[in-house]
Image (cartoon, rainbow over all chains, first blue to last red):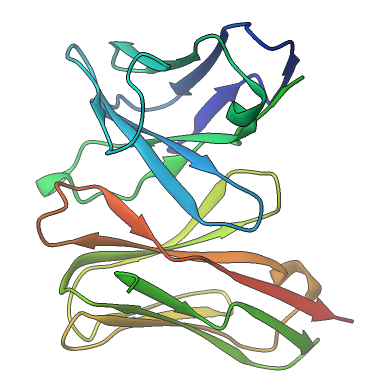
Length: 118
Length: 112
């Protein structure tokens, strides 16, 4: 159980293009999903918390207009990197947390999306 | 300084040897989560610890949380090449609103 699917796994596109990444919880409903960014040999950096039916909460330093998050249903959150530039190239990972007492259930992660902007 | 310190940064062991990875928090933890990651892939959930003094085991991996709930260790017994990867601890800290802070990870290499 607790499977999270992330798509696509790899994207290569030209500078200026907008890219959408999907994160789906396959066998549970997730009121909260998280989006992370990971640089080579670095840990995960939380970008934003995606809340179903409301606006995402962004971490300090993350541009809301650059990284658009939509959590339209209890099983789907999307991250759109708008007008992507080479510096946006990175590994993006989403996670979803199953409902549970006090919210302290483990986050389950997708397989990540490697984004390369030329 | 980092809120969550993980050590060592990397570890190379011979197959069959035991090893320990540590994770230390500057704050009291509500929960401590251990994950394994293969390079370029997602994180696989290993174990969750929430109570002081708690210890959990799965196959050859044992994780402990100290009584003060600020330090955790992950111990692998009789390591195998399949244990190789990056181990990350994630901490649910007081006041974090359920967000996790991750350590920098430990790269484990197991030589056959």
